[in-house]
Length: 148
Image (cartoon, rainbow, N blue to C red):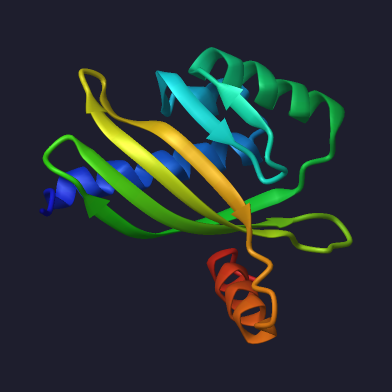
C-alpha cells in the first residue's frame, strides 16, 4: 500500500528533523519528532524510552561530547496501511579528524493527531564485514550528500 506524496515528504522530513536537531545540538528538536511513548536505540546500542527521555539523553550527549556533523539520507519509505510506515535510512558522522562512523537506520512512523511521528528509531553500525566496497560506496554517498 502506498501513501500520498505529501505523506512521504512529511515522513522523510521527520528523519531530516532528527538530523538537524543533532547538528544543531538540540535534543528538544529531536524529541518532538517522536511519539511520547517511543524507543530510540542508538549507534552504541543504548536504549532510550519516551520522547522526554530522548530530549534529556540527547542534550546530555551534546553537553558532554564533541559530536561532529551527522549526514543522513532517507532511502526508502514503505507504507503499512494509511497510518504507519517504515523508513530505511543511512547516515554517517563526520567527526573532526575521522574516522567517520556509518550507520543504517530503521524507523517506524505513525500518523498521529499531530501529524507523522517516529515510534521507533534503531541505528545499526554499517560495518559490512567482508564487503569493503559497500563501506566505500556508502562513504561516497554520504560525502556527496554532505557536499564534500
